[in-house]
Figure (cartoon, rainbow, N blue to C red):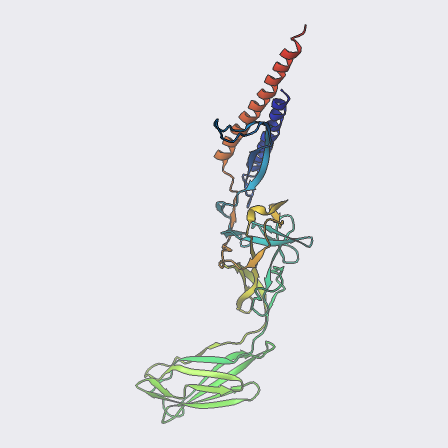
Length: 389
């Protein structure tokens, strides 16, 4: 009788654990990035009452064993993809695939699937509990992927450095019917390495053979070339150097009846501050700066594991590495099985309510059945004690 009592107790404990796990799953049905868990049962040691017999003159006999109950073998985490929920918030991110975000909490490296990030007062992207998103910060628009991880920052104090003008482009038409000596003046602002803006002047002078072009910058540097046209198309004089600036004239034409020559491009710019940003599918944070530049500010790091089910839940929808999860392999979204990032969306919980309510019924009936084992064993013991009256 004692064996059945203790088997019933082990069943109560195991099914209570199943109820606890199922209740936690249902409680987190709307938790972004939550991964449901399931309980796995196994039997305990069995008492051997009769050993197996080898076949001889008589046939062999099988062992006779009495089980001693049930125990929880493990609680497995289901890392199947959750559904997407569009939020429209630029800093919300969803991983489509098997990767994890790397976050830093008080100096401890943790990992999460919950991508609800927001800038803090320092411009760092953080979760609701203050975990800081990790990645690689860009240096002059270049992201050093593979280096040490750092905080992802989108502060308005970020600066796009000034760039000196090295090339300018001219397009349009100079009139073929213009009289010799006709002058066209064009000007564009160019920049030095500190972002200082100065004018670059181009003078087009009509000659008998075509057009002479003279350029002058603010420092007094000059350059000249002679453009010739045949049937309106340029045949010579397509480039000119003024100081350190190469002027491209190859797009110009020389047809009759039009005067549309204009300096339409130059590659320099002043320094600028961050005005807005967006996040691409590979996790690159692309900043839009006040000087018109668009360049990477940082890139979100992605992590994957040989055995994600071996990760330990650390609370706040975060996980930490264990001895059976394997180390974190870092990379970028869109490569090597890390998944891709969808900005403006969140991954919802992967809890299946229909399955969880079914599990509730199974756990409840299992609990009731094991409770019946105990009451039945108690009634039998009661009969035994009442044999002597």
